Length: 209
Image 1 (cartoon, rainbow, N blue to C red):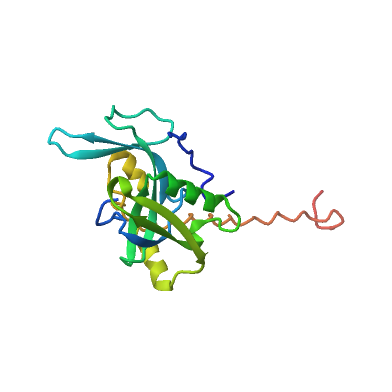
Image 2 (tube, rainbow, N blue to C red):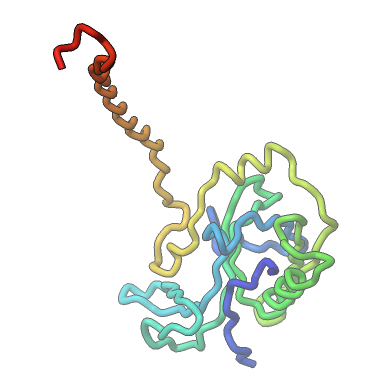
């Protein structure tokens, strides 16, 4: 089984800031540190709508589900993933809708020479602006992250399924400490066995019968 076997791709149809990656001009280096199994990698459909106040709001839903509303622009398939951003030295959410990036990542995950992208870094190269923008993705040789980087990834909890409900994927409740298991009641002490009365020997001359 390969890294992206659990996702359903959308049929071919011809980031932000803060906790979300905003791709910069040139090379952007990341390590994917989440997976479908731990809600650190999801995909689906993304549509944008204009609110009453004139703002733009994203709507996301799973591939194959009905869109929550109508959109002026055709919705796009998205990949969202928990990544370690080397430029920021922290965990962020990387969301990609560009077909070239999705297809390239999918190729790397299916290729046995590369496989699970949590084992190597990826570079996304952005050039140009507006309609002239181009993107490319390049996988780097396999290597381990430093212990400090790994600990940052472990300590930063992310649940990307919150995006389907327009929630905050970083708003993950802390796990409560496990309660001690109740100790089983001790087994009752067995009642002492009564020694059976010994029967007299029949050849005893003092027995009256």
